[in-house]
Figure (cartoon, rainbow, N blue to C red):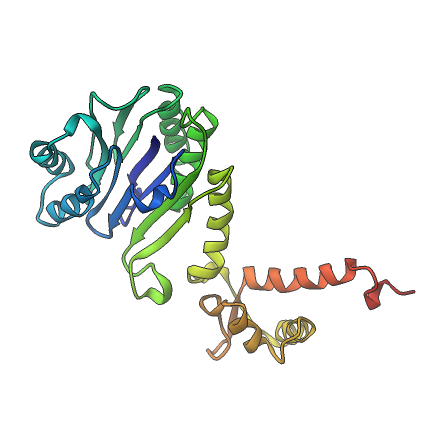
Length: 288
């Protein structure tokens, strides 16, 4: 019912899962990950208890293969299960039970596993691994996982069709305000094009739920600050600070620091509101 990719980032600091399926809310069932330990996808007729059990075994020092072997030994229906697992060191292990609906299979590479069942064929997993290898220079694990999922979807994906998709990435202190480890946790529970929608949400996740990098920060000199204050007022806010809070850009600006700064994405969004106003019929700029 599902195809997925489980992987560790090249720098060894992030772990994640991307998954899609003709199944409602696949993100509520398949993926699990803990920063510093690893990630797992459980599917086919999934034993969801495997997620917590596997991560606990990794925490105790087991490798991905050892953890998976133990899960299979203790399970009463291993032929109906499918799973992929990547551990702290990037070791991968996967299992496809003989009872999984065809086409079903998995492939394991350095720091990555891809697996699927009820697929159009092995070309789905081949396309995912090819994408993974081709994007090795992409620094964001979420982007690499999404690209692999998109490649699998284009190659045929779930032969029953499309319904849901999800993306989970963990990295220490990568969450909101740096207070947890969840870098990305996005789910498209019901959609005609769930993988496409997931890509749109990942773009939004960047601006709303991740902190600015040093390279993305623009210092607010007098001229830029005056421009942005004016644009914020034109958008219906008393000042730039209110605009930032109202639009939930607090992780993308610090107006009280010395020097004060705002993210380049926020600058672009504010400037786009001016362009939109100029194109709106009846706007003062259109009357001449």
